[in-house]
Image 1 (spheres, rainbow, N blue to C red):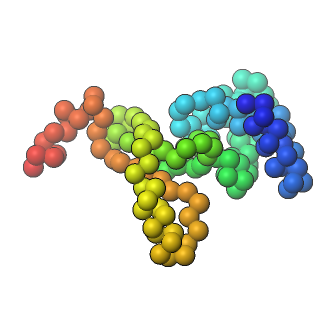
Image 2 (cartoon, rainbow, N blue to C red):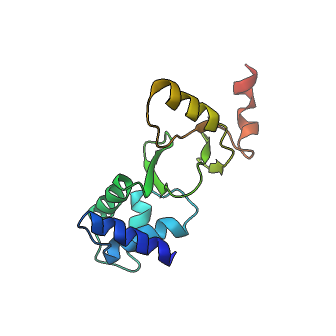
Length: 149
């Protein structure tokens, strides 16, 4: 993880910016967590180390990291925005419409489609996202009638 922070520092330095302790704390929380966090979740966790930090600082750090391609902003249809590191392999999400559980899966079935679309359209695709909405194994029995009707 230290190499990652060294790389982020270099990237920010190129833009005449610094990896402040607050920005580093935000990034560390995202990298250490396996959940998809809201800005408020990150704010609550960051305040343990930096009690004086404001929510606006969290949003500014997240916007900056998103612009730099370090963080992805996700919309799971619940009216909120969640964040996760944008580093690593593409993955997709299964979202339970009842309990809100979010599960990830790594099978990138869109790879060939991604390449075909880019080639045929001339569009430079940097990333893609696939979200399935439905019911998790715990909630699906409550909603079987919706599928059967």
